[in-house]
Image 1 (cartoon, helix red, strand yellow):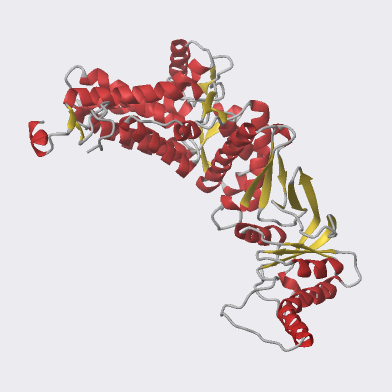
Image 2 (cartoon, rainbow, N blue to C red; image 1 turned 180 degrees about the vertical axis):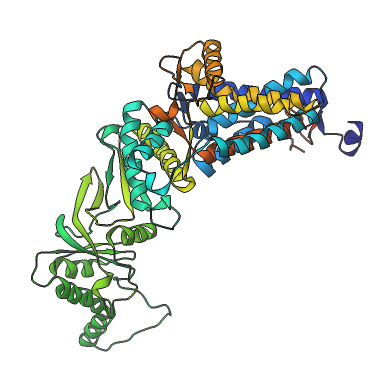
Length: 544
């Protein structure tokens, strides 16, 4: 310590014993904050920002992102947990609980004088054994068995921990339909192909799946058709507005007739492109009453809009770049960058295109797309915080179902894996020698924090519930038993459809133990410059 002071006299140092105690206390404090939010019976937190914005949620990632965590140790744990959510879409709260419980179990042995390195060695052995046990415990799912019921159960298991049960079941059906829509053989699932739009009206149960796209703007000409059926969709990235020349040039005329010719020549460049689109529309539609919808990424000026309207074309301008890709996948066809040599193959098709006005906002619905590989989830809700809550839940639900499709395996939920892994580590401990047994024992007991917290949040007797689970899981046949939060008794998760993601469990075991091990090996906390909790003597003086 004195050596650091010699290098930097302003350094603030916390010594070995105090630094460990500080890290353990910070982990337990963060754990106690999010503990009550775990599982379907978890309670909510109300977050109020400085501007007065309200968020009511029990999603671990939202809580950790919105809370302004100052403590360095708690901040490390929170960042690690949110990193897991970014990768897998779930497991944030479980990660914080597991890390905090690992450090709490370690503190018992540290208080008796055991060196942290010994505990860490035990943790490493236990983690490696658990990672192998995940592959033994999981239930592989063949491609042809990825049916609607299984995917719905996975979505429900995830969403019921975020929103109330009735809404979770409604959103689960939407999530499964969305994943089935965007899934293409031998290609990764791109969740960006699910457009999530929201409207502040009606109730949360009016959230719906749309087999097409919803654009957040409408046609810019008042006389264009508000509703078209059996439509051709023409997607393009062509400027249909008057553009100034890129070089500064002056044009001179001697009389009014020459000026009119110059104005006509300037417009001719744009008008020719519009006329080619009109000719193309007449060619593909003929005398039929089919609609023709032009969706352009670039602009369409008023004169061009007027020409299009007179030809019976609905023109929508300045569509988002991402929507151009989604439209091609939803309606078929492809986006064109030039109006030369147009081919009917570039056209998509939709059964219905209509405009919906909500207050001052206009929305264009493109529905009834056949063989679509892009879709929209339209969120409805009475207020902003309900919409934000549904949006966060949908994000996690989509990732949960995608993980199952990509992993082609599921793992029993309701605390079944943690109970089975605890029993496996107790057997594994007997095969090891020396003090590393203490680390393995601490790791095994830390896993039980998940079923314990589920029981506590459901208002059950924690000790009675855990003992019943342990006795049942150690019986003949080693059944995969989980906790029934309604009765406090044992249940078989596969019978009631409670499934977790394999990659979430692997990330939980890896990241949770990794952070705990790193924090246990911290022997000093050094902060140079400004002292902990001390302001400079002169408020006007610069902080060195």
